[in-house]
Amino acid sequence: MLNEIKMRKITVEDVPHVSEILEAITKKKVSKAWLQSIEVYLKKQDVVGFVALKEGEVVGFIIGEIKGPGFGIEKSGWIVVIGVCPRCMGIGIGQRLAKKIFEYFKKKGIQDVFTSVRWDSVDMLSFFKSIGFDRSDFINLGKHLE
Image 1: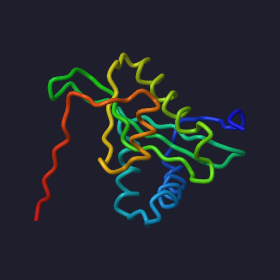
Image 2: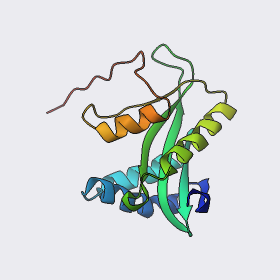
Image 3: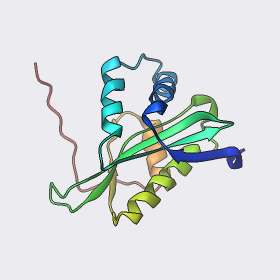
């Protein structure tokens, strides 16, 4: 089944499919503001993304970015968001998407890749651990502004 999955670069035209996948995963409506911001984001120079296609249908996606230097590190790759259609989870699509973005980062001379995951998102933590992620030297900090 995994050999039926094709990969290609993401385009702005894929945003509605990305939205559908995120809504299926989170069971919440994706805001119009998020959709508009992701469309703008995809047009940035150092942003890259890929979609996984099964029989022409987008069933997964990954979006990343090259950042830096900053915060004490040289250029680094960041996985901003990843998602796989729930009915296609568990067959390796997420791992293939991650491998594809890792290859891209490596071609660009990137050695360190980071992401951020909610502490209580066990499924995402498990996924990232399965593709070789571990704790980094960074601590995510947050502040809510009223």
